[in-house]
Length: 318
Ligand code: NAP
Image (cartoon, rainbow, N blue to C red; front, side, top):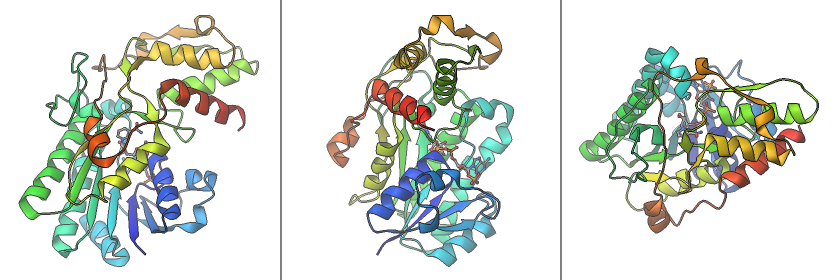
């Protein structure tokens, strides 16, 4: 029976990955910064709270990382922890850099120090690419990060590549484009839109305030993105992969689809708010997942409109 350690198990991806690995017969352990006080709502929601072993771990503290790895002795580590909001990273750049870049480095160093044959997955991000001018980014596209979050993710990506090359670690980065689900917190714009539209449909007179609606993103379905993470660690050789649906849509299209699904016209309920614009933003996020399809056999089944339907349905049944 394989043992997996999921760092950041309380998050959206952590919960879905834990569910996937449990279904595959893994023993699943997960970390939170403070497992004693975390409510692990996402694990509760998926009905797996009592099926996973939980540990406290501070990624920025090497001793803490080493202690957990020594205790758990995992076969696979999935690093999904760290400050994960692009918007918040402009307010907390140091916390963002440390939790992502130092955190990843501590995990790599601990694996190297223990001389353990642990396979390592790192959650990289399409934000690393920056603006590609509408060209679909693949694994050869240069990074031009445009936020503290993206800078941190780019640093962590190169740490992983360096430890793979220099020390022969089985270490992979998944360069994932946006993926959504009912477990997304409202801090993220997709869930903010879904939640507001559902409240309005149920009688609320509120307005929904949004920043730049012209941005384009590739939105996928989180439960199938965690399958790609798992597949990367089952390959003969470690490698990096872009994970995306291959289709981009504007935020305006996303908003229109959400409001239409609750029989409303978004024009009546959405207000543009300049205070929500970011200091720098990406106009178009576009991904080319051909390598994942060819080498992992992974392909997104759900596109933006499916994601909207599933998020709205889940919100209305809450
Ligand atoms: P998430 O729901 O925010 O979960 C991330 C977890 O990291 C949290 O549950 C939290 O666990 C921990 N965390 C949060 N802030 C932290 C900090 N400052 N220091 C240390 N740990 C912190 O994120 P997700 O959507 O599941 O994404 C998983 C990973 O994939 C993240 O690294 C994210 O950046 C990356 N990613 C996500 C997407 C996406 O579209 N979802 C796309 C590309 C990459 P505790 O509070 O329990 O400690």
